[in-house]
Length: 60
Image (tube, rainbow, N blue to C red):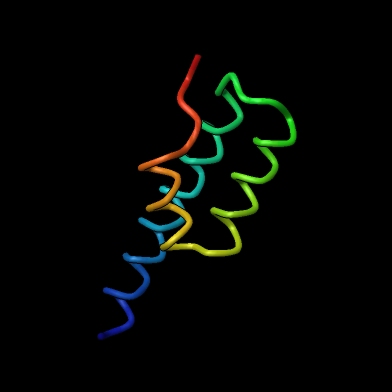
């Protein structure tokens, strides 16, 4: 992969992580659950986003 494509993927990943964090913080979950979801998304970037997308807290 060239540097431009890799940089583009990094920007997309950053946007997804920010979107996930904002959605998690806006959900109706408890503070502890929010912290755990955000840690999951940050510590396991790709897998954490996939798990959050499937099973994460919903807005409410």
